[in-house]
Amino acid sequence: MKPVREGLYAAVVLLAIAVFFAPTIILGPVYLALVPGRKGLDELIGEVDKGFLVLDVRGANALDPTTGDFSVVATPALIIEHGETIGFSRFELKGNVWELLKNTTGVGSELARIWLDEGLSLSLPSLRTEVVM
Image 1 (cartoon, helix red, strand yellow):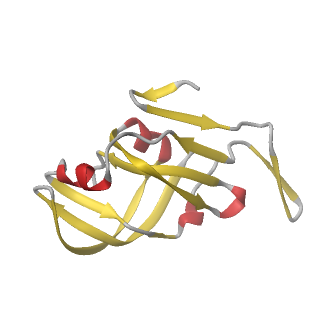
Image 2 (cartoon, helix red, strand yellow):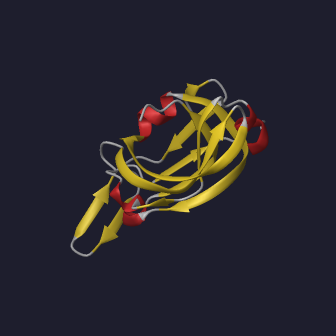
């Protein structure tokens, strides 16, 4: 595995797996796994001056598996100020998965498995990333 950033490794299964749907076959990345870091979620939150903790997203099927572009609604999301959660929010989040990974500044210690449409799946720890909205 090639390091994407210190402490963050991505394993992507490419072209070796064909995912079959109706009349089409999708060739490309179908699974992404990130090695967990050493920080707990509370520690990741404690290091944020101002930001959000996205608890769930709607529209995760809006991921383009070829480019990595996505557009989702983050709902609910906790508002974080000075390392403390202070309320709830909901907002649209657009970007690119690969840019998100490049801008990762913290990796949590626990993995969550996420299944997306078109046979894509992710095993991800909590990620703290710099995102401009």
